Image 1 (cartoon, rainbow, N blue to C red):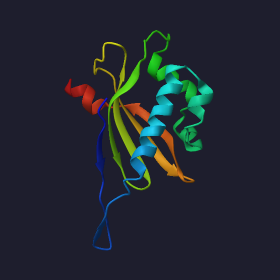
Image 2 (image 1 turned 90 degrees about the horizontal axis):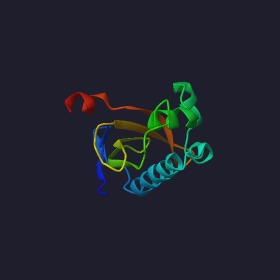
Image 3 (image 1 turned 120 degrees about the vertical axis):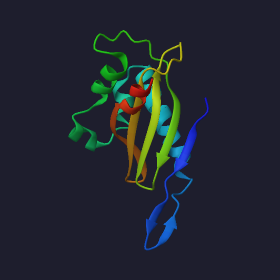
Image 4 (image 1 turned 90 degrees about the vertical axis):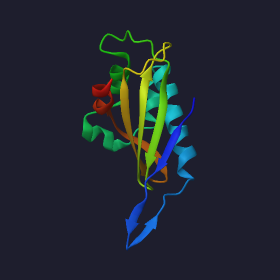
Length: 135
């Protein structure tokens, strides 16, 4: 599964600062752990990658599972496909698709991770309505 990456340049004091590429494997690893937790429907595994700040968005592992599997839990989740990572040294947005075995791109999602205490943690998830509208 190809992963597209874009580093966001930061302009500070007239100089461009490119975020460290060292963040890329860490963000990919967090997305993978999140995916495995969702695939196994394991709230504990999902909680291990959540920021405590996610509660401010009224979100949790339970709400993520409901978001992915639907209110009745009937969606046959396989992966967060075609991820695109856009990041700075403090925030990462991962645009992906919630996919089943058909690999259709009808359910775009954005995951927002924050770099907190030397680790990337999920801070928010939401449907990517900009992609949905263009389908």
